[in-house]
Image (cartoon, rainbow, N blue to C red; front, side, top):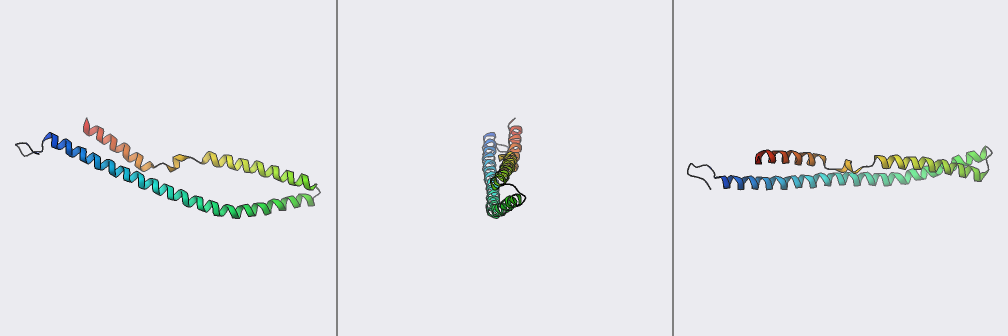
Length: 131
């Protein structure tokens, strides 16, 4: 719809602006979905590698701990003291490892930062256009 001078009318401009905003929001939503999908795939790959390597590490740890226990027995400790001592040290080290791992694990690393940043910029542009 145009006025007599051939320029688009105000309602026509508002309708066009609303259509552009709707397309922009749809595009931003697709961007968020894509970025979340990438982050999720990255996390799944990392978890698969952790699971596979954990089996090997657990086997190595059991053999190492048994070797330390036998070494302590060889140096004269009673078997129950050697097993208890190595078990206690293993529990403390394992507890500390879990504590530090959990403290570094956060959901902020999985957030779609680029999309959130772009949505903020788009919101600012829309505010400027409306005012």
